[in-house]
Image 1 (cartoon, rainbow, N blue to C red):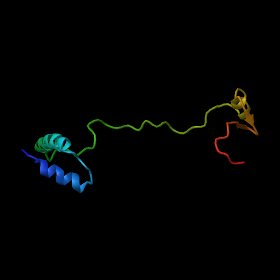
Image 2 (cartoon, rainbow, N blue to C red):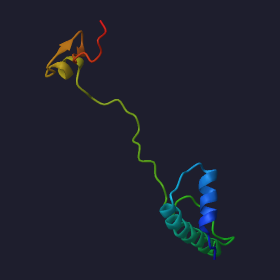
Image 3 (cartoon, rainbow, N blue to C red):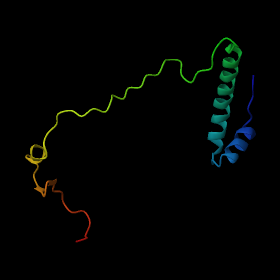
Image 4 (cartoon, rainbow, N blue to C red):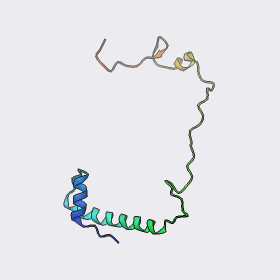
Length: 98
């Protein structure tokens, strides 16, 4: 089991260019020590017959195929717009350019 010291956490934070105050160093030293312990437990379970994986559940692509479907015409889409001009939605000018 690992015992990360406050100085080791401060050294890692310095390498990562992260500024931590004294309270954060004390808190993170305990948390990082737990994480190292959990990684050690996982390494104990890992065996040659267990394939490495990135996720415990199978991942499925949820993106639907890109298909052309019936949609509104340009005139129908602009019919309820408060302002339309030259086949486009009219919006308030946000820049002072002509």
